[in-house]
Image (tube, rainbow over all chains, first blue to last red; front, side):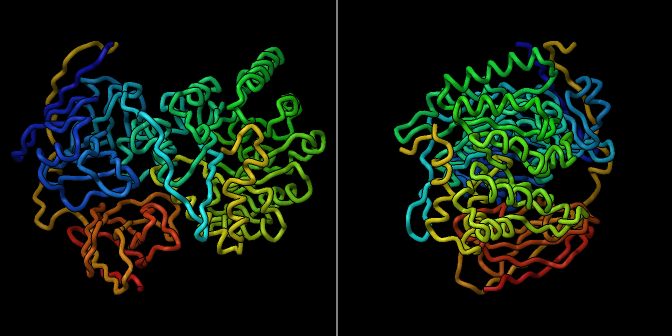
Length: 483
Length: 124
């Protein structure tokens, strides 16, 4: 394998000792893969307490201008066997010198550069202010051996099962550049320089301590549904075949049933009738032979396909044949490259399909969030059509457009209003919990807590909360059997 | 084309990075008080808006706070921030305050050179 060794010796005019930086390996004597005890033995106590963010730990040594990123088996504390996954230095360096020796970066923006050999730069007005070393993308080998059972979850003293039916696996290389940049920008600034490796880990079901399985276990989520996606212009691509690899993995099988089921998706890129026919046939065959695929997931706003596009009728035909629901992304999306014309996100544009395919269950993911008109249309469709269901992910975001179509910016999460409306309209029995994770460490756990608290505040009974958390899911997704 | 080579380069630190720092790095020094009996990790987070519309600009923690607890958060000088002090009561959720957590927000403040001090009191 070709591997570029890059040794950067940094000298300071005012007497600091040189630093040795080897991409994908180490800065000075701090190596990737060291334990917390080993790193502390070298560096001594850090400056201030490490910041622990649900399995991810950031520690710094100000006098040495060093920062270390670790993952910890204990999600709420740094344990002695926490593992170093990144090292950064905040010594300024000359960008031109790095480029002269190393070539152009594989990714670059105004304030970040990343090199696939395993290092990244944070820039401020063209100057390097932080340089990080992390594993080369695609070369990381550590994975979990088995899925940890979820923490016990109770509602009013009674155990409750949680199914998170909206999680996105992925890998950094197949994400759209704008999509991965958006995700990295959503991290706190001190984590962004580690972004490529960190996003890759967070999207990996099997990554130790912070991967999707670790995050769902921390969140007391018993089962998940993972999505394929074909959105090369916005979020990226995670193919049906890649999804099946996860579902077939031995770690996904357990006595209490699989940890994850999957939803296949559909590729509209480079579309023609001939191409479409081949892809429809492939999806039909896949759903006929893979019981772990429990539905079809579509995100037309990300895929640049109008919700009422006649081309999509083939998908309803396939869903009908396979007896599986279709889940549609509805509402806004913050990802660059996403269509923000209502025809792509407002579920009212699905009404013709809903009337034509009354025997195909349709789930309105995100309840049309972001636009009060789309949100109202989602609630209305669920009230009028027996086969329309609501899914609660991404409702921690604020409303951006009000009922008159005017911009609004109150910063308040939408789930309290949505949960109230669902209860008021008698739709609790058609509502499903989901998070839209993994996003960042602790997101799934936090979303579970917020939504359960929100349901309590809205007056949901214990049985109604349990229904939203998993009972309704098992009623709708018939291929997913409760064990 | 990149090859399998070992490169050594010398990078001179920018002179701005080597200046004297008598006052230390720009930072917020928060003295957080809490008179209640609930325990948990103390989280101090800086946001550019209130309520937050994005990730925190910086985070500091005290895993076993003894009140009044002093927490230091390094931030770029000149940054206008709102500070959230949160007692993260189990179940822990340091990134998303839950209904069980105790929180207090500061008014807007601008980080100066050296230390910028503030006192915050979390209601019991």
